[in-house]
Length: 82
Image 1: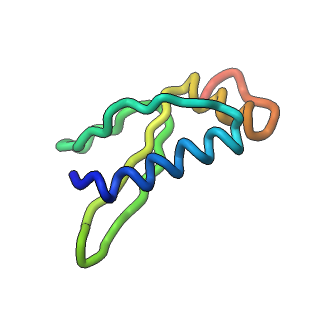
Image 2: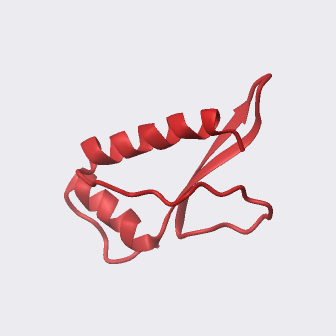
Image 3: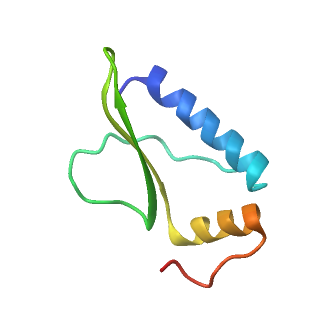
C-alpha cells in the first residue's frame, strides 16, 4: 500500500466530512484488505487503474456513523440502516 495514493483520499474524505456533514473525524490506520469479506455496515468502493496502481479503495462506515453523517448532511436520518 503506497501512502502517496491513500493520503489524498483520506485528506479529501476528512475535508468533505468536516464541511458537508459538520463532523470532525479521526480515521483509523488504513488497512490492506486480503479477503472478500465486506467490513462495516455502509461502504463506498473506488476502483483505480493506472500505470502506477491497479486496485480499489473502500471507505467503510459503521451504522451509527453512517446515520450521523446523513443527519449532518441533510438534517434528518432514519432510525436504522436498511
